[in-house]
Length: 80
Image (cartoon, rainbow, N blue to C red):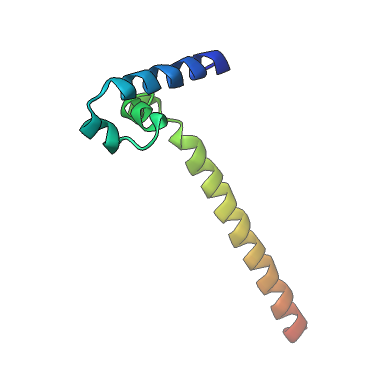
């Protein structure tokens, strides 16, 4: 989404928020909140959650490997 489209969307949301009745308008604290009704932008099938899971797997693998190497160093220090 380009900056112009984002800006237009914000302006449109602000105009729509102003058109609402005072009671409904008080429920919206900021014009950006009106945009939240359109989220999520993509269906769950297209969600890139797999990328986050992949990063988490690699992160925990690296942490486990670091702990293993540290344990070997400590054990080697005491038993060698």
